[in-house]
Image (cartoon, rainbow, N blue to C red; front, side, top):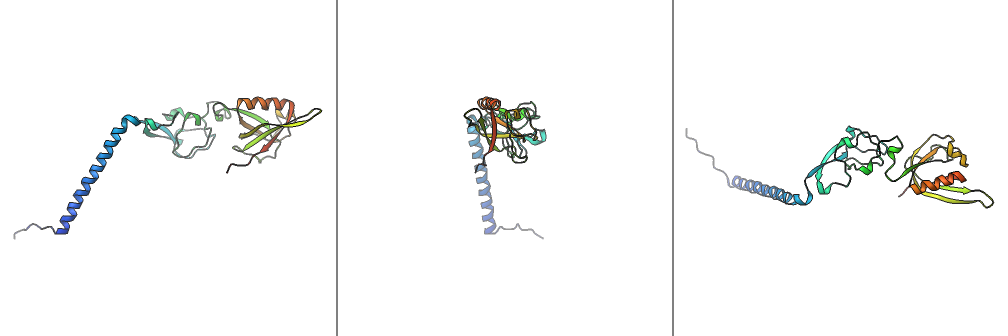
Length: 218
């Protein structure tokens, strides 16, 4: 029995031609893209590793290896201060919330000090005031103002600092700052500038401090 080769139909031939054309086009596009990337390499720099969050992380979290991962970006696109190795961040506390995949920079981690110092960003200070407000009214992240009422023959009230961020809330016990006349209540650890810390220290020595709570930003 003789075997005769199968003849391709016109439709099959058309599909074959289209497949070859599509394959050649795809190859040309990928090759052109690779060529453009290679041409840009001197401008964007070589790929470098950066540390990013493996999951959403809250402020104050002490970083461990499983919270972080490495990503690779062109050198020109790396954020200033981006950490290059996970070991640089392990054991440090976050001074701000970060989202999953967000780059971890030196300004996002605190020092290796105690639980409060580790959360204080560079250039700021932590200052403790007795709030005189009911427990549970304020939580970390809220914004407050501090007023000082000076006595004497002509008493007056002055605003010492505004928009201060609450770093943490301490148990509601009278502390050394209550000697200034502040009422008992949870003590607030506030993030302040060095200048604001001086004003608060002066006011706590000579005036009665009052803490007012600001609204949340829209």
